[in-house]
Length: 130
Image 1 (cartoon, rainbow, N blue to C red):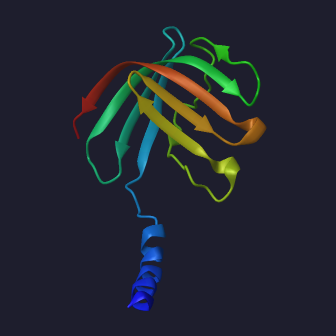
Image 2 (tube, rainbow, N blue to C red):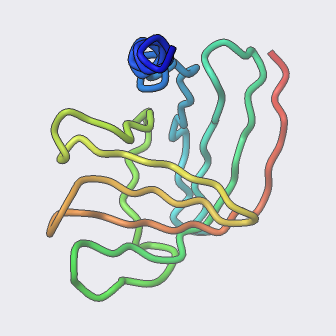
Image 3 (spheres, rainbow, N blue to C red):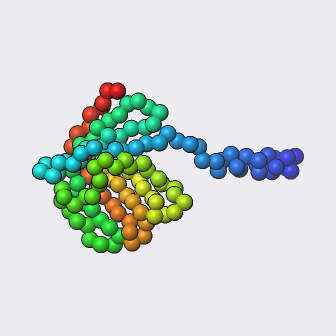
């Protein structure tokens, strides 16, 4: 009986380790207004037609162990770029994470000395109709 239970557990281990495919979230950088410091992102999930517009301002940009550069002009997102989080890349240099918590949005890229942290304060969120 113990052998059957142990064998059954061995069969279940691969199921517990299988990564389920999650819908891809994305953040499209649609605008940056230098005069106000505002960035505008459109976020959404591929299987969901609902999109959200996020208007935010840069708090700081930090690369590796360097001091953080603070202020609305310090972040370096690229208008037209689509950020698709890649939290478990094959190559650590392809790491990209986007997290939203409270009134903050964080973008973290790359690894080691090249790791870049950017923090934004969310000023407004608006649901978009499709």
